[in-house]
Image 1 (cartoon, helix red, strand yellow):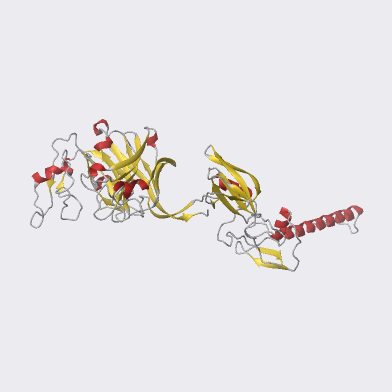
Image 2 (cartoon, helix red, strand yellow; image 1 turned 90 degrees about the vertical axis):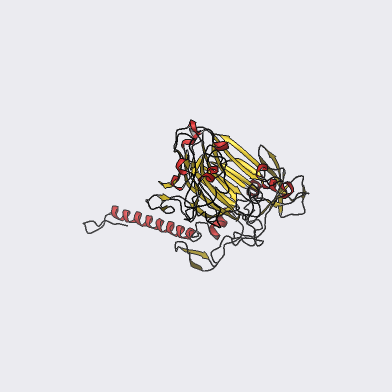
Length: 506
């Protein structure tokens, strides 16, 4: 408060009046400051209103506690909190039975409506008194228990601490209304009002950047060898590409698999025996025997799966020099394997004729051949289509009898100009595939139970699968590669994998 000192010796009437007004204003400011401090004493460090302000705000009955003011130092922000003779009240997230509280009937009705079924919603008003209750209050908010029961119901009015609302389904949702005293009873089983949400923990990811990828001797970044192994050679599906590591690299924070046209035609393709020990006890090989590995024969087993003796992983029957197309394929087998969980990839595809981008999971069980080991195709993109599928054995267990459950969506060139996200959610009961958050495929895994196939279900009991990323050319789905100007690229921004660690309270 500033007071100007005049130059004359005796004060005038105006100056005396000025001092009186200033004193009045100062008194008013002191009163307001005292009120603010009193209100602050009922505000907690975490922002919620304490015992006295809470009671006055809600119009609760009861008298204010008396006693000396005590100071408590909050851990959050080291704020000083005053209350009237008691410790600062805290919110109890759980009831004594370990269940989360539901705040009131309105919240309970919203939870029950999420079931989208005909039934009945029950709310218990006084499941547990909270620390900020006063003894005379029997109906404090924040203490309720919420239940939902499907089907025909009746009302047990003897349950006086409960109230019920009837729920009617329609239009993919439901409406619960008409609260009255009682509790739902009936033939259906009572279940928690809230359906709950899954809680996920990320356990593995690869962003294909300089922190993950490893430079080769030419200083080109390649996929992390702790995660990925390259496939080399002609592998399956009578596809036209020879897989080789040179066609897979990390660039600008993405994995890039490139399919190239190396030769104009298939004529003159042959395989040459390289770096192989034909002496006993090894199987004797020569160039002529290797020709069965080249198109159009496409023999994938002996002798075409024999490897060179330098541990490079290259087939002894090397067909790379005359291959019409080359491309890349990497897999996590024996390095990172997966079971139930949530999988996600962000990728950019090209489905012009001949190009076939894939991200899929295959069961890795000792001595269990395909299709008995199971297959989940998460991203299958070819000929302006996206396909998702599950493959398992029939009763014969033979490859010729493989059963596929699939769905597909049409896409267009504009859609392919951008990155998109694919997800697989897999648990013991079902698999779901989503593209950009939209569900495109769902399958109940009981379809592969032994009662139908005579073989153990490869998708249950959290069996281990490995992942494959590849860009094929031609084959039974890719289309005619002659119609497309190569190269073609399959780009992957990241892959992530979460495991379910539980669910929110139901």
